[in-house]
Length: 177
Image: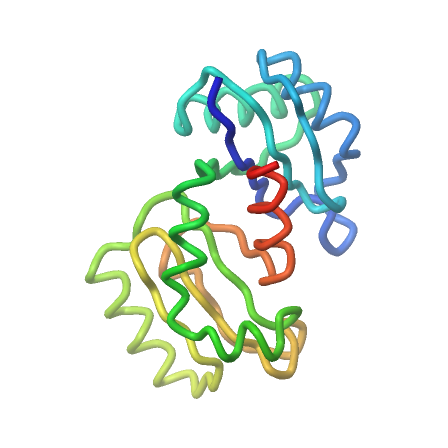
């Protein structure tokens, strides 16, 4: 069975959307996933599953809403797709030098060209200084002063969830081994 990387949006961040990782693991197992391993408490898992990405996303979203009253979005990536995402990082120096402040945003779907243009216009008008690059269904952002101090809003690009570079690499290593 194929391996999948599972990313939940806005779980256990700032005291909202509480979900113990043991509950996430049990829910994934209830959906037929095996070899379920979680990373940190922010909604990261690596699983073995027969379900394709979109089917697993939908099934997990529905299960969490039904069983736990948790409305959250799920993004699933294959290890090969995740490796490609990390390899396409347009700011490798920033990621290497400041991995805890460099994030990869996994979007539910790739932002349209018009959404990227609207984001760029809003970024210019908003005076945001953080460098942001969008490549396919992923965004790459460096927050040199940390995410808590930014005024940057990625909402114009669509629904997504961010992981810092260190977590991204750990997830890839988990999926590989």
